[in-house]
Length: 453
Ligand SMILES: Nc1nc2c(ncn2[C@@H]2O[C@H](COP(=O)(O)OP(=O)(O)OP(=O)(O)O)[C@@H](O)[C@H]2O)c(=O)[nH]1
Ligand SMILES: [Mg+2]
Image (cartoon, rainbow, N blue to C red; front, side, top):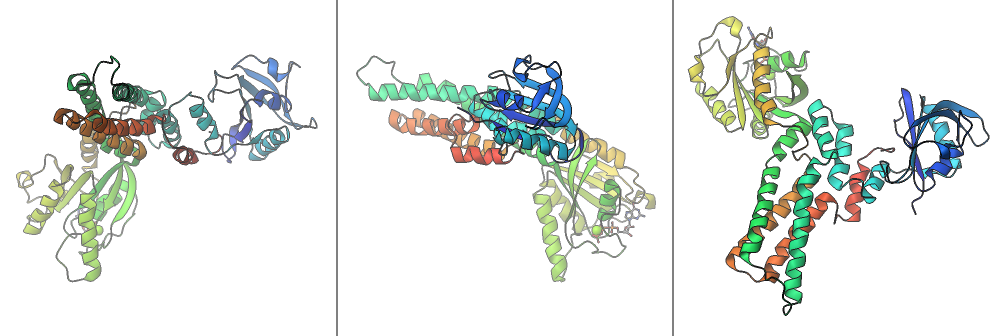
């Protein structure tokens, strides 16, 4: 028995079309009380998953809107239950009146994500797919959307479900051997179990390795602009952002704190951080700023080293270069190209060294191309990479438990000892797919959703 819930699925803004949605055992009966088809027939006679023209009205028959209804009978629906959608004009007042009419007709208000939660509970989606639905709604780049769409389509599920199923098989076999020692059940042995476990470990390891890319896809590339004072770091951030985001002066030490701005550079979304120029200083505030500059490089996916090409490199530059090279990706920019250049490219130990002029924006196209080349190549966005922290954590625990079980097998530990690790891996994998996830965690996952999804 599943009570019928209703919600406005298109939010509270004025839109061209607004959608009211219902799901539950009585969804069609409830909808029928507030929607009359133009052909005079009851809504329950409407063909499955076909748009039908009619009037939305209140219980007294007062017309609220003329619109389309679509009935999808379970189990062939998003939630797996009977569902009805009304496609109306997108006035928030009109949609509220329609929702009110549905409540009076017997529907209850839907909680956040309740439609998708029902789809999960009815087995229409596993948890990786359900979580990808919210990622798809929240995606703020085409690549992030493409990855989430691939996961909704089951790409991650197809990779992970066999691991869970394999672990369940292993556990049941171990239990059979342990519980019925006299039965003629093929005894467990290293040769039988090590190979599938190793394969699972390899699959999980390669998936875990994609998580860094997943974070970039979700949040953008963390890029830090670093260099000595006055080399033009803030001018560069302004030139990329396209407006005067940060203060620029000819006084060394102008920027005293890190300043972050989300920008598009070519096709890459950057969380670009301007930093305080790094130098030895007695000034307490500036020293704190310099410490933050170093921290920004440590947290960055890309360090952008900037120097002033009109002056020779000094030891202070070389120290910052060493810091940048500890970052997974780094680029050197020789700024102030308009003033002439006294620095040879060979003096800069970077794969990519580009002359730029932050004051005019010259050279930024080449910078954009270089950044695109690093990150576009790195990130596939077909749904095969791990973007979700909860999934990452559970996969990591599963991987570690499988590695322990393999070590146990190789050391000849008793089956009950090895079983502890395999069961832990199975639990963790079940948390990812949703097979064994705790109810409070499920509730928290669906709270991330909006009402009506
Ligand atoms: N000629 C020339 N001057 C530039 C260029 N880029 C920046 N400047 C000048 O260099 C000075 C310092 O620029 P900022 O962008 O404030 O330098 P910064 O690296 O952020 O300096 P701090 O915040 O002190 O670390 C300003 O007077 C800028 O106008 C450039 O490409 N050409
Ligand atoms: Mg500055």
